[in-house]
Length: 349
Image (cartoon, rainbow, N blue to C red; front, side):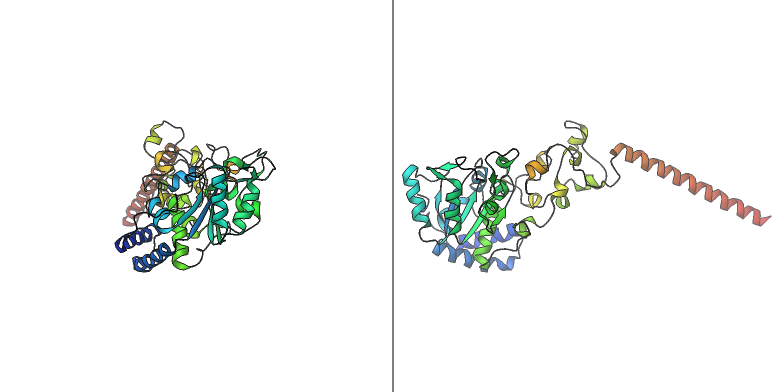
């Protein structure tokens, strides 16, 4: 059962978890004792979580179970009480319905939603009930609602045109304020960081106008991209498989949406900070932004409104231009020097 306790965390474990979380959030190390007490207090009460799963590919659950600050096991078994999660719990059928009814009966729970919500009747059903009806009931009675992944934030891939099921994100479908954690899939550290922040500070983190925590979505990917120096130097990949790609040049001309996407992907990374899209050679598709599947299509076409440092020219042309400019400067310098020498000779006469 998901609610079964693990082996329990020692005081040293709480300090370790707090230290790792402080580092992951980029906070001061002086907050570690306070964070350890907050996690310890939360573990004593074990806040209840109800995890709903609608239209998506389960990628956010896959991402969540690969977390390590703290690990999903530590979070699920020793800190939180995940009372309902369709993808990883043992119950099924009527037994699952009974588990959900029991979990939401006290109304003292946090609701995490994965996946978009079909709003056309009959296009999204669980146990004979509309997903929209389930979302209204469960989210409406929750202490807080967190929408994880692009699908839950604005419909994501399932809501791409033509979207016959009229799939919407949680906030829009229910007309309520939620904490949005977009990306495809969500970074597990951002979910855990948001939960830990609430447990520590007793309030939601500061959000931007799209409902995203600023501590995870406050900077453009472009500003922290490891290939940024190539962008500034006018060095771009023009074709996959080229020597420029092998040299790690900027992927902007191959469709990178980093200049228009806001998130901490370059800092946090995925799979225990192993890597992220840009580092494995893929342009950023902008999945942290609303309606990215439609607004940023075609995925391998460049953005229209981004000014390039040297205009839309290749690095070779920039090099030729610099060489011509340098040559002109040398010639000009020689002419000036010769002119000054001639003037000096004239004055001696």
